[in-house]
Amino acid sequence: MEICVVGAGYVGLTSAAVLADCGHSVCCVDTNREKIQLLNQGEVPIFEPGLKELITNNRSRLTFSNSVIENIGKYPVIFIAVGTPSAPDGQTDLTYVNSVVDLIAHSITSYKTIITKSTVPPGTNEGIFHKLIEKGVNPQLFNIVSNPEFLREGTAIADMLHADKIVVGKQKDDQRSLDIIKEIYQKIDAPYIVTTLSGAEMIKYASNAFLATKISFINEIARICDKYEVNVEDVRKGIGLDPRINPHFLQSGLGYGGSCFPKDVRSLEHSALKKKVTPIILQAVQSVNYTQVDYYIEKLLTVIPGFTEMTVAVLGIAFKPQTDDTRYSPAVQLIERLSAMNPMVHTYDPKARLPFAKKENVIQYENITQAITGADCIIIATDWDEFKQLDWVEIKKLMNGHCIVDARNCIDPESVEQCGLRYIGVARS
Ligand SMILES: NC(=O)c1ccc[n+]([C@@H]2O[C@H](COP(=O)([O-])OP(=O)(O)OC[C@H]3O[C@@H](n4cnc5c(N)ncnc54)[C@H](O)[C@@H]3O)[C@@H](O)[C@H]2O)c1
Ligand SMILES: O=c1ccn([C@@H]2O[C@H](COP(=O)(O)OP(=O)(O)O[C@H]3O[C@H](CO)[C@@H](O)[C@H](O)[C@H]3O)[C@@H](O)[C@H]2O)c(=O)[nH]1
Figure (cartoon, rainbow, N blue to C red):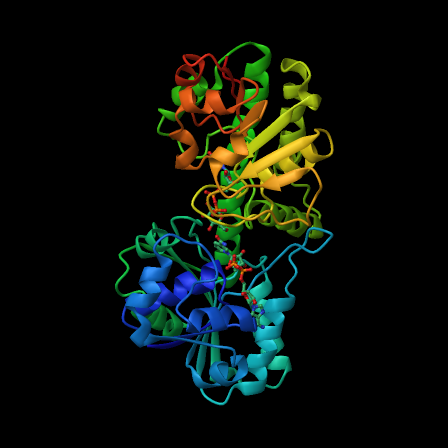
Protein backbone atom coordinates (compact mmCIF):
# COMPACT_ATOMS: atom_id res chain seq x y z
CA MET A 1 0.00 0.00 0.00
CA GLU A 2 1.09 3.60 -0.54
CA ILE A 3 0.42 5.62 2.59
CA CYS A 4 0.88 9.27 3.53
CA VAL A 5 1.09 9.82 7.30
CA VAL A 6 0.33 13.43 8.19
CA GLY A 7 2.12 14.51 11.39
CA ALA A 8 5.60 13.49 12.52
CA GLY A 9 4.91 13.43 16.27
CA TYR A 10 4.89 10.43 18.60
CA VAL A 11 1.98 8.76 16.84
CA GLY A 12 2.78 9.84 13.27
CA LEU A 13 6.41 8.73 13.42
CA THR A 14 5.65 5.45 15.16
CA SER A 15 2.83 4.69 12.70
CA ALA A 16 5.01 5.59 9.72
CA ALA A 17 7.88 3.40 10.91
CA VAL A 18 5.64 0.45 11.81
CA LEU A 19 3.70 0.66 8.53
CA ALA A 20 6.96 0.76 6.58
CA ASP A 21 8.17 -2.20 8.61
CA CYS A 22 4.98 -4.02 7.59
CA GLY A 23 6.10 -3.60 3.96
CA HIS A 24 4.14 -0.50 2.93
CA SER A 25 5.56 2.47 1.10
CA VAL A 26 5.16 5.41 3.47
CA CYS A 27 5.69 9.16 3.23
CA CYS A 28 5.50 10.98 6.56
CA VAL A 29 4.78 14.70 6.16
CA ASP A 30 4.87 17.52 8.67
CA THR A 31 4.71 21.31 8.48
CA ASN A 32 7.56 21.53 10.99
CA ARG A 33 10.74 22.11 8.94
CA GLU A 34 13.15 21.37 11.76
CA LYS A 35 11.61 17.94 12.43
CA ILE A 36 11.68 16.89 8.78
CA GLN A 37 15.24 18.17 8.36
CA LEU A 38 16.39 16.14 11.36
CA LEU A 39 14.59 13.04 10.07
CA ASN A 40 16.19 13.42 6.68
CA GLN A 41 19.57 13.63 8.40
CA GLY A 42 18.92 10.29 10.11
CA GLU A 43 18.00 11.82 13.48
CA VAL A 44 14.72 11.35 15.34
CA PRO A 45 13.27 14.50 16.96
CA ILE A 46 11.73 12.60 19.90
CA PHE A 47 13.02 9.93 22.26
CA GLU A 48 11.07 6.71 21.83
CA PRO A 49 12.93 3.44 22.48
CA GLY A 50 13.64 1.52 19.27
CA LEU A 51 12.17 4.17 16.95
CA LYS A 52 15.44 5.38 15.48
CA GLU A 53 16.48 1.80 14.66
CA LEU A 54 13.07 0.98 13.13
CA ILE A 55 13.21 4.09 10.94
CA THR A 56 16.79 3.34 9.87
CA ASN A 57 15.96 -0.29 9.03
CA ASN A 58 13.01 0.74 6.85
CA ARG A 59 14.50 3.80 5.17
CA SER A 60 14.02 2.22 1.71
CA ARG A 61 10.24 2.33 2.17
CA LEU A 62 10.02 5.48 4.29
CA THR A 63 10.41 9.11 3.23
CA PHE A 64 9.95 12.39 5.11
CA SER A 65 8.76 15.63 3.60
CA ASN A 66 7.51 19.13 4.29
CA SER A 67 5.52 19.09 1.06
CA VAL A 68 2.27 18.32 2.80
CA ILE A 69 -0.31 19.17 0.16
CA GLU A 70 1.66 17.56 -2.70
CA ASN A 71 1.93 14.25 -0.88
CA ILE A 72 -1.65 14.32 0.39
CA GLY A 73 -2.67 14.76 -3.23
CA LYS A 74 -0.46 11.91 -4.40
CA TYR A 75 -1.15 9.07 -1.94
CA PRO A 76 -4.32 6.92 -1.95
CA VAL A 77 -4.28 6.33 1.82
CA ILE A 78 -3.99 9.26 4.22
CA PHE A 79 -3.38 8.79 7.94
CA ILE A 80 -4.20 11.92 9.95
CA ALA A 81 -1.90 11.87 13.01
CA VAL A 82 -1.66 15.55 13.93
CA GLY A 83 -2.03 16.93 17.45
CA THR A 84 -5.44 17.52 19.06
CA PRO A 85 -4.61 19.65 22.12
CA SER A 86 -7.02 21.13 24.65
CA ALA A 87 -8.64 24.47 23.95
CA PRO A 88 -8.81 26.74 27.04
CA ASP A 89 -12.40 25.63 27.78
CA GLY A 90 -11.40 21.94 27.75
CA GLN A 91 -12.84 20.97 24.40
CA THR A 92 -10.52 19.50 21.80
CA ASP A 93 -8.87 22.06 19.54
CA LEU A 94 -9.35 20.63 16.06
CA THR A 95 -7.38 23.33 14.23
CA TYR A 96 -4.69 20.93 12.99
CA VAL A 97 -7.13 18.22 11.94
CA ASN A 98 -9.24 20.79 10.11
CA SER A 99 -6.20 22.19 8.34
CA VAL A 100 -5.42 18.69 7.01
CA VAL A 101 -9.03 18.26 5.89
CA ASP A 102 -8.76 21.58 4.01
CA LEU A 103 -5.60 20.36 2.29
CA ILE A 104 -7.34 17.13 1.29
CA ALA A 105 -10.28 19.11 -0.13
CA HIS A 106 -7.88 21.26 -2.17
CA SER A 107 -5.80 18.44 -3.56
CA ILE A 108 -8.10 15.46 -4.05
CA THR A 109 -8.37 14.21 -7.62
CA SER A 110 -8.35 10.43 -7.13
CA TYR A 111 -9.93 8.03 -4.62
CA LYS A 112 -8.64 8.26 -1.03
CA THR A 113 -9.13 6.38 2.19
CA ILE A 114 -8.85 9.00 4.92
CA ILE A 115 -7.93 7.40 8.24
CA THR A 116 -8.08 9.46 11.43
CA LYS A 117 -5.52 8.25 14.00
CA SER A 118 -5.62 11.46 16.02
CA THR A 119 -7.85 11.33 19.09
CA VAL A 120 -10.95 13.34 18.19
CA PRO A 121 -14.28 13.83 20.04
CA PRO A 122 -17.38 11.85 19.08
CA GLY A 123 -18.93 13.30 15.93
CA THR A 124 -15.67 14.67 14.48
CA ASN A 125 -15.24 12.11 11.70
CA GLU A 126 -18.88 12.52 10.65
CA GLY A 127 -18.10 16.25 10.62
CA ILE A 128 -15.05 15.66 8.39
CA PHE A 129 -17.26 13.78 5.93
CA HIS A 130 -19.76 16.63 5.75
CA LYS A 131 -17.01 19.25 5.56
CA LEU A 132 -15.51 17.59 2.49
CA ILE A 133 -18.92 17.35 0.83
CA GLU A 134 -19.61 21.03 1.62
CA LYS A 135 -16.28 21.91 0.03
CA GLY A 136 -17.51 20.30 -3.16
CA VAL A 137 -15.58 17.04 -2.96
CA ASN A 138 -17.32 14.20 -4.79
CA PRO A 139 -18.38 11.56 -2.17
CA GLN A 140 -17.29 8.84 -4.63
CA LEU A 141 -13.73 10.12 -4.20
CA PHE A 142 -13.22 9.23 -0.55
CA ASN A 143 -14.16 7.25 2.52
CA ILE A 144 -13.52 8.20 6.12
CA VAL A 145 -12.26 5.76 8.73
CA SER A 146 -11.79 6.34 12.44
CA ASN A 147 -8.88 4.22 13.59
CA PRO A 148 -7.82 5.50 17.02
CA GLU A 149 -4.39 4.71 18.37
CA PHE A 150 -3.81 3.11 21.78
CA LEU A 151 0.00 3.15 21.97
CA ARG A 152 1.79 4.34 25.10
CA GLU A 153 4.87 6.49 24.92
CA GLY A 154 7.95 4.50 25.88
CA THR A 155 6.53 1.25 24.47
CA ALA A 156 4.97 2.71 21.32
CA ILE A 157 6.42 0.27 18.77
CA ALA A 158 5.53 -2.89 20.68
CA ASP A 159 2.09 -1.48 21.45
CA MET A 160 1.44 -0.97 17.73
CA LEU A 161 2.97 -4.19 16.50
CA HIS A 162 1.30 -6.27 19.20
CA ALA A 163 -1.88 -4.26 19.59
CA ASP A 164 -4.56 -5.81 21.80
CA LYS A 165 -7.18 -4.63 19.29
CA ILE A 166 -7.65 -2.71 16.08
CA VAL A 167 -10.62 -0.37 16.35
CA VAL A 168 -12.22 0.59 13.06
CA GLY A 169 -15.03 3.08 12.86
CA LYS A 170 -16.55 3.28 9.40
CA GLN A 171 -19.59 4.53 7.60
CA LYS A 172 -22.51 2.19 7.00
CA ASP A 173 -22.01 -0.11 3.97
CA ASP A 174 -18.37 0.93 3.57
CA GLN A 175 -16.79 -2.48 3.01
CA ARG A 176 -14.05 -0.99 0.83
CA SER A 177 -12.36 0.83 3.76
CA LEU A 178 -12.50 -2.24 5.97
CA ASP A 179 -10.74 -4.29 3.27
CA ILE A 180 -8.08 -1.59 2.92
CA ILE A 181 -7.54 -1.38 6.68
CA LYS A 182 -7.21 -5.17 6.86
CA GLU A 183 -4.61 -5.08 4.13
CA ILE A 184 -2.71 -2.29 5.88
CA TYR A 185 -2.65 -4.21 9.17
CA GLN A 186 -2.22 -7.64 7.59
CA LYS A 187 0.95 -8.30 9.60
CA ILE A 188 -0.58 -7.28 12.91
CA ASP A 189 -2.33 -10.09 14.71
CA ALA A 190 -5.10 -8.44 16.70
CA PRO A 191 -8.87 -8.73 16.99
CA TYR A 192 -10.93 -6.17 15.10
CA ILE A 193 -13.65 -4.08 16.68
CA VAL A 194 -15.70 -2.67 13.85
CA THR A 195 -18.18 0.04 14.72
CA THR A 196 -19.47 3.42 13.59
CA LEU A 197 -17.24 6.47 13.23
CA SER A 198 -18.46 7.91 16.55
CA GLY A 199 -18.33 4.47 18.18
CA ALA A 200 -14.59 4.25 17.48
CA GLU A 201 -14.04 7.79 18.72
CA MET A 202 -15.89 6.96 21.92
CA ILE A 203 -13.92 3.73 22.51
CA LYS A 204 -10.72 5.78 22.54
CA TYR A 205 -12.03 8.33 25.06
CA ALA A 206 -13.70 5.72 27.27
CA SER A 207 -10.46 3.74 27.33
CA ASN A 208 -8.34 6.69 28.47
CA ALA A 209 -11.00 7.87 30.89
CA PHE A 210 -11.25 4.43 32.49
CA LEU A 211 -7.48 4.16 32.93
CA ALA A 212 -7.36 7.68 34.40
CA THR A 213 -10.20 6.70 36.73
CA LYS A 214 -8.19 3.75 38.06
CA ILE A 215 -5.27 6.09 38.82
CA SER A 216 -7.39 8.71 40.59
CA PHE A 217 -9.19 5.93 42.45
CA ILE A 218 -5.96 4.51 43.89
CA ASN A 219 -4.68 8.02 44.65
CA GLU A 220 -7.84 8.70 46.64
CA ILE A 221 -7.51 5.36 48.42
CA ALA A 222 -3.88 6.35 49.19
CA ARG A 223 -5.09 9.56 50.83
CA ILE A 224 -7.41 7.52 53.07
CA CYS A 225 -4.71 4.89 53.74
CA ASP A 226 -2.34 7.64 54.85
CA LYS A 227 -4.73 8.72 57.60
CA TYR A 228 -5.18 5.16 58.88
CA GLU A 229 -1.48 4.27 58.59
CA VAL A 230 -2.24 1.58 56.03
CA ASN A 231 0.30 0.73 53.34
CA VAL A 232 -1.39 1.45 49.99
CA GLU A 233 1.00 -0.98 48.29
CA ASP A 234 -0.59 -3.83 50.27
CA VAL A 235 -4.01 -2.61 49.21
CA ARG A 236 -2.89 -2.35 45.57
CA LYS A 237 -1.58 -5.91 45.61
CA GLY A 238 -4.62 -7.17 47.50
CA ILE A 239 -7.21 -5.75 45.14
CA GLY A 240 -5.10 -6.26 42.01
CA LEU A 241 -5.16 -10.04 42.38
CA ASP A 242 -8.90 -10.02 41.76
CA PRO A 243 -9.10 -10.58 37.99
CA ARG A 244 -12.15 -8.31 37.84
CA ILE A 245 -9.94 -5.46 39.06
CA ASN A 246 -6.46 -6.51 37.76
CA PRO A 247 -3.18 -4.98 38.94
CA HIS A 248 -2.64 -2.47 36.11
CA PHE A 249 -2.89 1.30 36.49
CA LEU A 250 -3.16 1.12 40.25
CA GLN A 251 0.17 2.76 41.05
CA SER A 252 -0.36 5.73 43.33
CA GLY A 253 1.88 8.75 43.03
CA LEU A 254 1.77 12.33 41.83
CA GLY A 255 -1.17 11.66 39.52
CA TYR A 256 -1.46 11.11 35.80
CA GLY A 257 0.11 13.43 33.25
CA GLY A 258 1.19 13.28 29.64
CA SER A 259 -0.22 14.44 26.37
CA CYS A 260 -3.33 12.23 26.52
CA PHE A 261 -5.09 11.53 29.83
CA PRO A 262 -5.44 15.13 31.06
CA LYS A 263 -6.70 16.49 27.74
CA ASP A 264 -8.83 13.49 26.81
CA VAL A 265 -10.68 13.21 30.12
CA ARG A 266 -11.34 16.95 29.95
CA SER A 267 -12.54 16.68 26.37
CA LEU A 268 -14.91 13.82 27.21
CA GLU A 269 -16.29 15.91 30.08
CA HIS A 270 -16.86 18.70 27.57
CA SER A 271 -18.56 16.36 25.09
CA ALA A 272 -20.89 15.15 27.85
CA LEU A 273 -21.78 18.64 29.06
CA LYS A 274 -22.45 19.71 25.47
CA LYS A 275 -25.26 17.12 25.43
CA LYS A 276 -26.44 18.07 28.94
CA VAL A 277 -25.02 14.96 30.61
CA THR A 278 -23.27 15.70 33.92
CA PRO A 279 -20.16 13.50 33.93
CA ILE A 280 -19.87 13.13 37.71
CA ILE A 281 -17.18 10.45 37.65
CA LEU A 282 -15.02 12.22 35.06
CA GLN A 283 -15.19 15.41 37.11
CA ALA A 284 -14.20 13.59 40.29
CA VAL A 285 -11.32 11.84 38.52
CA GLN A 286 -9.95 15.20 37.40
CA SER A 287 -10.53 16.79 40.76
CA VAL A 288 -8.34 14.17 42.48
CA ASN A 289 -5.69 14.52 39.78
CA TYR A 290 -5.59 18.34 39.79
CA THR A 291 -4.96 18.38 43.53
CA GLN A 292 -2.57 15.45 43.79
CA VAL A 293 0.73 17.39 43.58
CA ASP A 294 -0.48 20.00 46.09
CA TYR A 295 -1.84 17.29 48.35
CA TYR A 296 1.57 15.65 48.32
CA ILE A 297 3.42 18.92 49.01
CA GLU A 298 1.10 19.55 51.97
CA LYS A 299 2.09 16.17 53.31
CA LEU A 300 5.80 16.93 52.94
CA LEU A 301 5.33 20.23 54.78
CA THR A 302 3.74 18.31 57.65
CA VAL A 303 6.16 15.39 57.92
CA ILE A 304 9.49 17.07 57.12
CA PRO A 305 10.37 19.85 59.58
CA GLY A 306 11.99 22.85 57.88
CA PHE A 307 11.11 21.57 54.41
CA THR A 308 10.84 25.08 52.91
CA GLU A 309 14.46 25.82 53.92
CA MET A 310 15.78 22.77 52.12
CA THR A 311 17.67 22.32 48.87
CA VAL A 312 15.59 19.72 47.08
CA ALA A 313 16.76 17.45 44.26
CA VAL A 314 13.87 16.34 42.05
CA LEU A 315 14.68 13.21 40.06
CA GLY A 316 12.57 13.08 36.91
CA ILE A 317 11.09 15.71 34.62
CA ALA A 318 9.27 13.57 32.01
CA PHE A 319 5.64 12.65 32.69
CA LYS A 320 6.66 8.98 32.87
CA PRO A 321 9.81 6.91 32.25
CA GLN A 322 11.14 6.00 28.79
CA THR A 323 10.06 9.27 27.17
CA ASP A 324 11.32 12.83 26.86
CA ASP A 325 7.75 14.15 26.81
CA THR A 326 6.99 16.76 29.49
CA ARG A 327 3.44 17.66 28.44
CA TYR A 328 1.30 17.94 31.62
CA SER A 329 4.12 16.30 33.57
CA PRO A 330 3.35 16.10 37.31
CA ALA A 331 7.14 16.25 37.88
CA VAL A 332 7.28 19.64 36.15
CA GLN A 333 4.29 20.84 38.17
CA LEU A 334 6.11 19.73 41.33
CA ILE A 335 9.33 21.52 40.34
CA GLU A 336 7.38 24.72 39.64
CA ARG A 337 5.64 24.56 43.03
CA LEU A 338 8.92 23.89 44.86
CA SER A 339 10.71 26.72 43.04
CA ALA A 340 8.17 29.13 44.53
CA MET A 341 8.76 27.72 48.00
CA ASN A 342 12.30 26.41 48.41
CA PRO A 343 15.61 28.28 48.11
CA MET A 344 17.09 25.85 45.58
CA VAL A 345 15.73 23.07 43.39
CA HIS A 346 18.11 20.74 41.57
CA THR A 347 16.76 18.41 38.95
CA TYR A 348 17.86 15.66 36.61
CA ASP A 349 16.18 13.48 33.99
CA PRO A 350 17.83 10.89 31.73
CA LYS A 351 16.04 12.27 28.63
CA ALA A 352 13.69 15.20 29.25
CA ARG A 353 14.51 18.91 29.40
CA LEU A 354 12.76 21.44 31.66
CA PRO A 355 10.04 22.98 29.49
CA PHE A 356 9.80 26.37 31.20
CA ALA A 357 11.95 29.51 30.98
CA LYS A 358 15.05 29.65 33.14
CA LYS A 359 14.38 30.22 36.86
CA GLU A 360 17.07 31.57 39.21
CA ASN A 361 16.67 28.78 41.78
CA VAL A 362 16.11 25.79 39.47
CA ILE A 363 19.09 24.01 37.97
CA GLN A 364 18.85 21.05 35.64
CA TYR A 365 21.99 18.93 35.86
CA GLU A 366 23.30 16.59 33.19
CA ASN A 367 24.06 13.83 35.67
CA ILE A 368 22.47 12.50 38.77
CA THR A 369 25.54 12.87 40.99
CA GLN A 370 25.65 16.63 40.48
CA ALA A 371 21.91 16.93 41.07
CA ILE A 372 22.07 15.07 44.36
CA THR A 373 25.23 16.69 45.73
CA GLY A 374 24.40 18.99 48.64
CA ALA A 375 20.66 18.19 48.59
CA ASP A 376 18.79 18.07 51.88
CA CYS A 377 15.97 16.09 50.34
CA ILE A 378 15.59 13.96 47.21
CA ILE A 379 12.19 13.54 45.57
CA ILE A 380 11.71 10.81 42.97
CA ALA A 381 9.07 12.29 40.66
CA THR A 382 9.37 9.95 37.64
CA ASP A 383 9.91 6.22 38.04
CA TRP A 384 12.88 5.79 35.70
CA ASP A 385 14.76 2.50 36.22
CA GLU A 386 17.94 4.53 36.84
CA PHE A 387 16.35 5.88 40.04
CA LYS A 388 15.16 2.48 41.19
CA GLN A 389 18.74 1.15 41.05
CA LEU A 390 20.48 3.89 43.02
CA ASP A 391 23.21 2.97 45.50
CA TRP A 392 21.87 4.60 48.65
CA VAL A 393 25.15 4.28 50.55
CA GLU A 394 26.83 6.44 47.90
CA ILE A 395 23.83 8.80 47.73
CA LYS A 396 24.02 9.43 51.47
CA LYS A 397 27.65 10.50 51.15
CA LEU A 398 26.72 13.12 48.54
CA MET A 399 23.67 14.52 50.33
CA ASN A 400 23.55 17.24 52.91
CA GLY A 401 20.36 15.88 54.49
CA HIS A 402 18.72 12.49 54.77
CA CYS A 403 15.16 12.64 53.35
CA ILE A 404 14.27 10.41 50.40
CA VAL A 405 10.78 11.11 49.11
CA ASP A 406 9.47 8.40 46.79
CA ALA A 407 6.58 10.16 45.06
CA ARG A 408 6.04 7.15 42.75
CA ASN A 409 6.33 4.34 45.34
CA CYS A 410 8.94 2.80 43.08
CA ILE A 411 11.86 2.05 45.42
CA ASP A 412 12.32 -0.40 48.26
CA PRO A 413 11.93 1.47 51.58
CA GLU A 414 14.16 -0.97 53.45
CA SER A 415 17.16 -0.48 51.16
CA VAL A 416 16.94 3.26 51.81
CA GLU A 417 16.39 3.03 55.56
CA GLN A 418 19.23 0.49 56.00
CA CYS A 419 21.63 3.24 54.92
CA GLY A 420 20.44 5.60 57.64
CA LEU A 421 18.27 7.65 55.30
CA ARG A 422 14.62 8.53 55.95
CA TYR A 423 12.12 7.08 53.44
CA ILE A 424 8.81 8.82 52.74
CA GLY A 425 6.54 7.17 50.17
CA VAL A 426 2.94 7.74 49.15
CA ALA A 427 0.80 6.21 51.90
CA ARG A 428 3.50 3.67 52.57
CA SER A 429 3.88 3.51 56.34
N1 LIG B 1 1.37 10.68 22.17
C1 LIG B 1 0.72 9.55 22.40
O1 LIG B 1 1.15 8.71 23.15
C2 LIG B 1 -0.59 9.27 21.70
C3 LIG B 1 -1.12 7.97 21.71
C4 LIG B 1 -2.35 7.72 21.09
C5 LIG B 1 -3.02 8.75 20.44
N2 LIG B 1 -2.49 10.00 20.45
C6 LIG B 1 -3.19 11.04 19.70
O2 LIG B 1 -2.53 11.16 18.44
C7 LIG B 1 -2.49 12.52 17.99
C8 LIG B 1 -1.07 12.97 17.78
O3 LIG B 1 -0.40 12.95 19.02
P1 LIG B 1 1.18 13.18 19.12
O4 LIG B 1 1.54 13.05 20.54
O5 LIG B 1 1.86 12.32 18.11
O6 LIG B 1 1.28 14.70 18.64
P2 LIG B 1 2.56 15.62 18.47
O7 LIG B 1 2.17 16.94 19.00
O8 LIG B 1 3.76 14.93 19.01
O9 LIG B 1 2.74 15.72 16.89
C9 LIG B 1 1.81 16.26 16.02
C10 LIG B 1 2.53 16.71 14.74
O10 LIG B 1 1.58 17.15 13.80
C11 LIG B 1 2.18 18.19 13.03
N3 LIG B 1 1.15 18.97 12.30
C12 LIG B 1 0.22 19.81 12.78
N4 LIG B 1 -0.53 20.29 11.76
C13 LIG B 1 -0.07 19.74 10.63
C14 LIG B 1 -0.45 19.83 9.25
N5 LIG B 1 -1.47 20.59 8.86
N6 LIG B 1 0.24 19.11 8.35
C15 LIG B 1 1.27 18.33 8.74
N7 LIG B 1 1.67 18.20 10.01
C16 LIG B 1 1.00 18.89 10.96
C17 LIG B 1 2.93 19.00 14.08
O11 LIG B 1 3.92 19.81 13.49
C18 LIG B 1 3.49 17.88 14.96
O12 LIG B 1 4.79 17.48 14.55
C19 LIG B 1 -3.27 13.29 19.06
O13 LIG B 1 -4.61 13.37 18.69
C20 LIG B 1 -3.14 12.43 20.29
O14 LIG B 1 -4.18 12.63 21.21
C21 LIG B 1 -1.30 10.28 21.04
O1 LIG C 1 -0.61 2.98 37.63
C1 LIG C 1 -0.33 4.04 37.04
C2 LIG C 1 -0.13 4.11 35.63
C3 LIG C 1 0.16 5.34 35.06
N1 LIG C 1 0.27 6.46 35.83
C4 LIG C 1 0.54 7.76 35.19
O2 LIG C 1 -0.40 7.95 34.15
C5 LIG C 1 0.16 8.74 33.10
C6 LIG C 1 -0.06 8.08 31.75
O3 LIG C 1 0.68 6.88 31.68
P1 LIG C 1 0.60 5.89 30.43
O4 LIG C 1 -0.80 5.51 30.20
O5 LIG C 1 1.56 4.80 30.65
O6 LIG C 1 1.16 6.83 29.28
P2 LIG C 1 0.68 7.41 27.88
O7 LIG C 1 1.82 7.25 26.96
O8 LIG C 1 0.12 8.78 28.12
O9 LIG C 1 -0.49 6.45 27.34
C7 LIG C 1 -1.88 6.68 27.58
O10 LIG C 1 -2.40 7.62 26.64
C8 LIG C 1 -2.23 7.26 25.26
C9 LIG C 1 -2.73 8.43 24.43
O11 LIG C 1 -4.09 8.43 24.25
C10 LIG C 1 -2.99 5.97 25.00
O12 LIG C 1 -2.84 5.61 23.64
C11 LIG C 1 -2.47 4.87 25.92
O13 LIG C 1 -3.22 3.69 25.72
C12 LIG C 1 -2.60 5.36 27.37
O14 LIG C 1 -2.06 4.38 28.26
C13 LIG C 1 1.64 8.91 33.47
O15 LIG C 1 1.81 10.20 34.05
C14 LIG C 1 1.90 7.83 34.49
O16 LIG C 1 2.91 8.16 35.41
C15 LIG C 1 0.08 6.40 37.21
O17 LIG C 1 0.17 7.41 37.92
N2 LIG C 1 -0.20 5.18 37.77
